[in-house]
Amino acid sequence: MPRNTLTAEQIVRAAIELLDAEGLDGLNMRSLGGRLGSAATAVYWHVGNKDNLVRLAGDEVWQEIDLPDLDSLDWRTAATTMAAGQHAMMTRHPWLVQALAGHLLYGPGKARHDDHILAVYEKAGFVGAEADQAAATVFVFVLGSAAGASATIALTRRLNRGGGDAEEQLRDTMARASEIAMTYPRLRSRLQGASAAEYNAAPDDGFAFGLQAILDGFEKRLSALGTAAGPGDR
Image 1 (cartoon, rainbow, N blue to C red):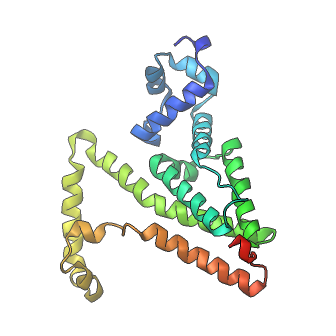
Image 2 (tube, rainbow, N blue to C red):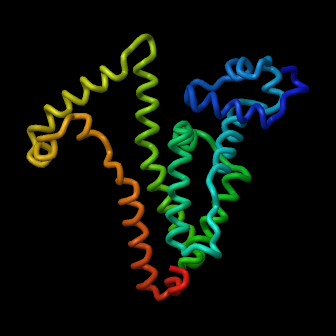
Image 3 (cartoon, rainbow, N blue to C red):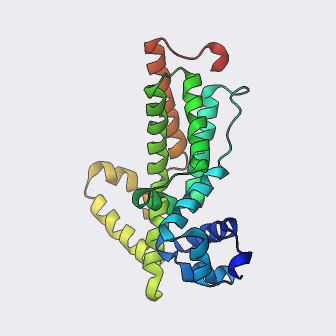
């Protein structure tokens, strides 16, 4: 595309697709220009530089998270819905976890989300800074949960470079790790009767378990403070 036919929106969408496929290290203006049928200089003209492009892409994906209606849902259902939406979005775009650690990300998409999540915890009964702390606690948990999948994808991509076989290398590594684990009683009891892959895999309901434990803790704190939402909001 000639420079005057490209739009920033097209570039950001193509950048997200490239990031999903190649990761943060695979994003460069030449590859992006190739996807768009345009010169790299035209991409630079619209978005400035790679850091700004990552910021734009990183903000755009937050728009994918649906905001629950707080007039029709209790706070806990709304909090669960938003946390699940965060986790699903980060799983779809595993590069975002790495981008959050190395780039300054901000914009209207993230602000839209953050404003709504504060409203969720204010509805629960948290006041002022405690609403921010509640939202941050859940976000850190979601980020940590998504980091596992992100790391696996990044590791697999690295191991496959240069004709490597990531699946074989991971299988051999898990076998060696399992041999070591068998020398420890608690690990041995969990390994017996399970394959190495099953042992190393995270439980399917691990995210839901952790999230509900956090929300249970919030309810106990609110009850202790006497600021919990009323029966109609639970």
